[in-house]
Length: 97
Image (tube, rainbow, N blue to C red):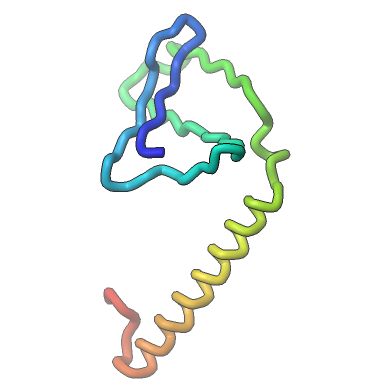
């Protein structure tokens, strides 16, 4: 998926995410996708926007695929930690510092 639109109940396109170079996610034909939207409003007067949240409770979607993603992220973080420590041992500083 390289583009996602969020559409209001009246059919108005509310928000869009699009990046041709960086896919947001990969989805198989039989896969289910849940996307969360973080909406940052600045310069808007307090109490001038009402937000109604509907849809599935994302907290209940801890299935096998989610567990695999979390496990892989943990492995990557561990690798990065060990690489940074090895770099510091050799050069006396952490990478990028």
